[in-house]
Image 1 (cartoon, rainbow, N blue to C red):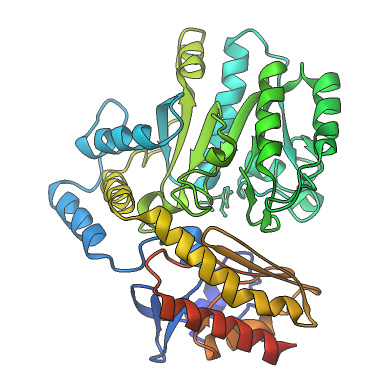
Image 2 (cartoon, helix red, strand yellow):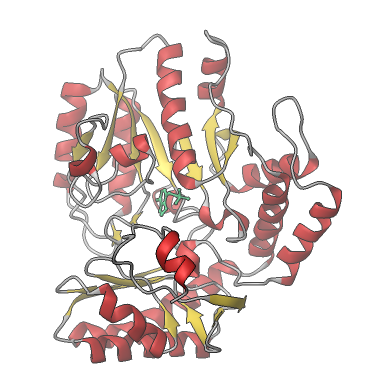
Length: 422
Ligand code: PMP
């Protein structure tokens, strides 16, 4: 392992004294990552949900080259530019219609912070300053910054470590009704109880629509989201949809909210927004929220990152959405879903596997025991694939451009790894 990397660089959730092995990448094209050792492996992770069109895409490269020749960055305070306006027009044409105002920021976690601040400032402006808390379902993940962390799952998240200084939020059980199973009305009992007793103090309910990602790779029933949205309206609680992982087609819909025909009050997008080329995010809200904030003291929304609406990020995001919309993405995601289901299903019989589930271009193999990362990570690479499990979850969400043959090779790599691991 490179000494500089091992001795001086933090990796995500890593130890400085006992780091997991890292693999140096020297190139990437399509679905392949090229290692410094010369092997090419299939990226089953789309670099954490983001690289939906694959690596080194000529159209995305060209969009960046064109913009870089004009200007790479200007501050957004008092200035504007075509890439931001074009992207905004494009985004507004694909998100739920009630969302009309866009706030750009640098990453998913910041987009969540912005959403939570918006909800708070809206309620303050609307004369309900006592609405200071947030509610969510257990098993969620919304990012690593302070407020985002406060609404991550309290057990698998980082609450125990930071509990004394994290804001205390309300949690209800995750719905037991799965996406493919039957709907159980009782799933709403806790939400109803919470809203009845606490609605005066809750500013917003934040959820990952349909797919809970890093908190457990769990697919829940659309009826839960539909009923939750109704209850939020009834009790004057805003609904924040965190579509950072699910947005741009991953679940089989452009945005997972569409499964329940729900229009959230605030929506966060990120990750695949730029086709995975750079860190960028957008928080969208309704005119009701934007105007209420703007027509009451302090008459402005209190947030403004240095790299807000970075023109390179806007340009590549715009082209990434063009690429997606020009493709027959829905048919393609359906193809990946059918293939992943067929290819991964045999693993359900494996003695070490608890459950196999697939939705859209997301495949999950839940093991009975948590996997040992030191042991399993090199095995995946040996078997020609890049996967990054956590806990009991081995999961894949490949780039949408993956071919049938590459999908078969990916599934083979997963099977061989699980077989030799356990
Ligand atoms: N929300 C969800 C649903 C996510 O999956 C993630 C990232 N895994 C985030 C928020 C945070 O995004 P970022 O890592 O870009 O800060």
